[in-house]
Each structure stands twice: as C-alpha cells, then as structure tokens.
Image 1 (tube, rainbow, N blue to C red):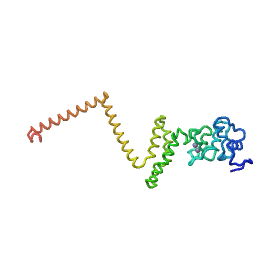
Image 2 (image 1 turned 60 degrees about the vertical axis):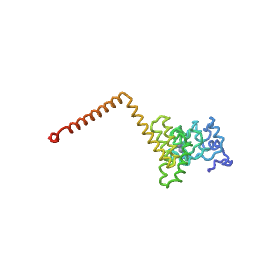
Image 3 (image 1 turned 180 degrees about the vertical axis):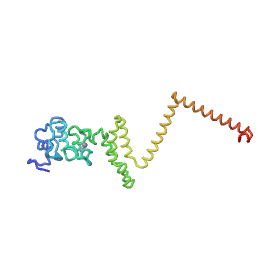
Image 4 (image 1 turned 90 degrees about the horizontal axis):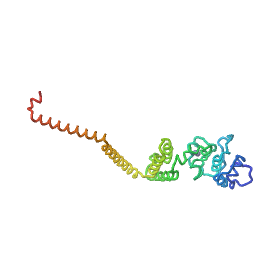
Length: 254
Ligand SMILES: [Zn+2]
Ligand SMILES: [Zn+2]
C-alpha cells in the first residue's frame, strides 16, 4: 500500500481519510450513504487506471462510487465494462446492497445502469449466483467437465445481459430470467423432465388455440367447408365405385 504520509496504521484508516488523501477537499461527504461509507475502514486504495486522469469528485454519486470503491468487495470476475478497461479505478468493486448492484467504476459518472451487475441487468444477483453455484456443483458431480460448459455461471450471466437488450417488458424479463435461474439448478434428470413438460404444455396450448380458432366465424366457415369437401369426396368415391361395379369391364377400358 503506498504511503500517503500519514503516521497512522493504514489498516485502521477510514474511507474518508483515504478519499481526502487522494482527492483533497473537493470530496464532499453529505448524503447518508456517503457518511456511512466514509466512516468505514478502507479495504483498498482508490488506484486509478490513468494516474493523470482528473476525476469529477464533486458530484455526489461519484463520491459514493469513490467511498464504496474503498470499502466494498472486489468482484470475483470483473463486470464487462471493467473487463474492457472502463471506469476510473483498476478494480471492479461492488458494495453489497448499494448502487443498484452496479460496480463502483460503472456507478461513477452515473453509468451504473450499464454495469452487467446492475440489478436491472441481473434481477436476482443473489439467486442467480446461488443457482449457478448449485448448477456447477450438480454438473461437477454428475457429468464430465466438458459438458459443464453449457450451464456455466457465465453463460447465465451473459444470457441475462442479452435479455435486457431484447426490448421486453419488465415482467417478461423477470419471468425469463427467473426461468433461466430455475433451470440452472436442474440436474440432467430434471432437465429431461422439464423438456417433456414443456413439450406437453406446448401441445396443449396449440390444441387450445386451434379449438379457439374453430369457435370463431372464420374457423366455423373453414371447418364447414372442409366437412363439405370431405362429404362431396366421399359421395363421389362411392358413386365411382358403384358405377365401376355396374359397368362391364370393356366399357371402362375404352
Ligand atoms: Zn466493474
Ligand atoms: Zn460495472
């Protein structure tokens, strides 16, 4: 940890101490969240990706990002933006329960909604994480490693991120994400059964749709026309058969 010419033990320095040391008195600690974070022990220095970058620390959400960056947990795998080298600081840090789940780098300059960890992009981070862990555990127990690729936690997270770009309504997004999350916890047997159940439901819905159609005027007209054609066909066939039976063989050949 670099020395900030403070005689104190770095381990006991608060986020406020480090914030003032790094950014001077442009740091304004006024919101409730800022005050809470500022009083916590700093777990890391706010190390900038580009040392000479001038950060706008006067903005309240940016102070929150700074303080949370020093006091939160570093993500086991960085968000997409941090991975690409975006955001002011070198680490991807999330403060549990704050900033809508987004990392501090994305929260900086109000870009939280672009973070792959943001709750809107990732509606149940806890559930999804637990589900992914459970799924990985299941897969590791049941399958050779090659097969575990298809339901790895990353696949789920990427899919969740994609869903947000499909322009679906909030409730549909929730439903899809919940379903993906549920499926991630399934064993192979559960997945086979789920597929059969899904196919049975699909068949049921198609039959129901067809029956609904038959009750519409258009459906009734078509159904009647089809019955009519069938009846005409049958009587024609019967008539032909009858005349063939009556007629002498040479007459048919000529
Ligand atoms: Zn990040
Ligand atoms: Zn992020």
